Length: 168
Image (cartoon, rainbow, N blue to C red):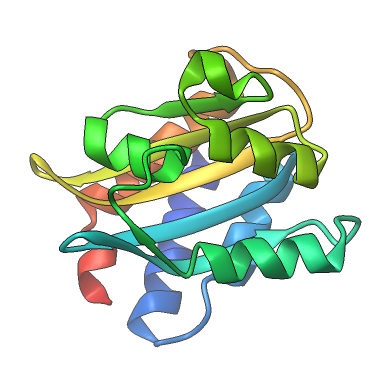
């Protein structure tokens, strides 16, 4: 695990323990990975509850606000969203503009509104239980194994290993 990832995990843990917003940490991850939007959700029974969301300032304010509201609490039946699919299937979900191919039609709609090309939602595990998801939307296309995706996966793994979401 890289030094930046370790620092991000320390900052995230401190924010959650201190009952502070996680947005500055999300901004750091977004800038590191050159994304358009990023969010962190925890899984509570049959819903995802938003812990934090941030989108670049260049994004339409209405779109940012609508997405933040829409994903404040998401039922786990809404598998047209990558954040839900990652939880339900317990594997990363990659959304593209071709939602019919990925089965993530709703994610595709949001990608268009975000002026993004792709999203990557990574489940967060504590042991063998999925407790949350970390997701990012980007303007470029990545493949699994690319350094950007590996960094996001490492951060998600670190969140689970340190049981950071369990501190909420």
